[in-house]
Amino acid sequence: MPAITRTTGWRTTDDHLSGARSERTLHALLELSPVLNPMIQLVPQLKILLACEPVDFRKGIDSLAALCKLQLKEDPFTGAMFVFRNRTGTALKLLVYDGQGFWLCLRRFSQGKLRWWPKAADTPLHSLEAQQLSVLLYNGLPDRADFAEAWRKVDSAAFHQAARASASAASAGSPRA
Image (cartoon, rainbow, N blue to C red; front, side, top):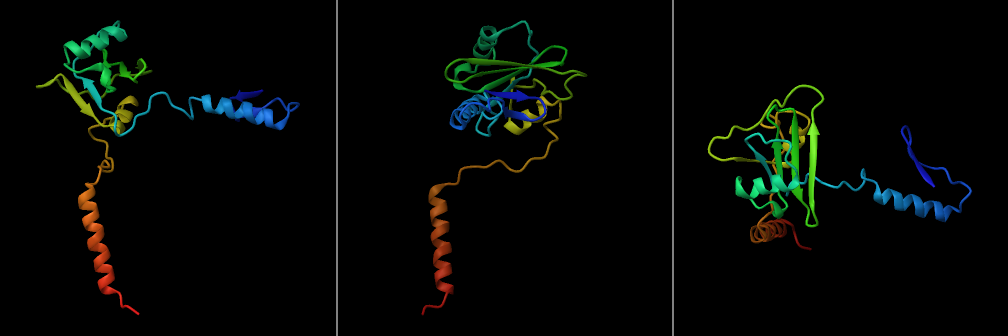
């Protein structure tokens, strides 16, 4: 049966088995690998909301979902990711509903405190892009990070009009035989 080693990753230790059986076993284990199939993905389409005020980290899934609904006025069942920080700024909790249940993830920093967090001015929530959350999870400064412009869906009517104009310009400029 394939085994995981710290230095080489996956390797096969059942050489006495037929090659087909070893291949099937390895393929099945690779499909279950969290490295290849992440449980929670930070994709650009994900709505990410930071709660500006610190939260009591004794709260669990149900308490945080209730906080989203009652205080933040957002439905926790929409699939949006809610990010909370503790009072000391040394940890983050991420709450997200994936259609079958809630995920609650805890990120505690080994050293120091969060270097950036939005102020609660007019709204209790602050929206983030996926790449900004990635920076924040490593205690970076997402407001200072520089990213390429986010991809936006092109209006199909405008796209087809531009394509027709480009095609007609190309045919007008080319000599016919």
